[in-house]
Image (cartoon, rainbow, N blue to C red):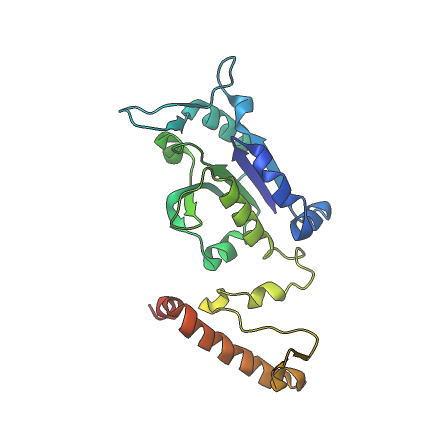
Length: 228
């Protein structure tokens, strides 16, 4: 799977993709992640990518021309399943959306900065607008890293155990059940006997019950979403 990411501050995206699961997947050729510096397409001697907004107001806006030129250049090379703009006013990112996006082959992510991007870029190119929460970041780079990580772990071959992602929180609108590892007893707290029984059907039933109870207690809204 290929990710292209447009950023005004590409240095922010170096570390998230140079470690752990994502690094192994890129080294093995399962993922391809390309970060594109928007300033390469900036205007004039200062490589300008932002300007004052029409109508006045605080904050700069990312300009049409640099973004349009870079996006068009990328679209000539790659047929994208989606062109995603990371923005606080986008649709809240969920596991369901991650599952859907993981079925594609090529995604282009646009990281906003300053007061955001010129509205005409959204009209000309963007097919999805996504937010990672009801709060504002300094730029879309952190949000882009979240999307890449969440989507990538669903791509076959990225995880050592491909079934692991199927039992994560939010799959089937349930939080994950409690998990334990060795030792079987620690500071007087014991692993539930059912997990030591070796009876897989009963273990699966216990895990589902625990997931349901935890969801009812901590995130009852997820169960309401499922019923709607």
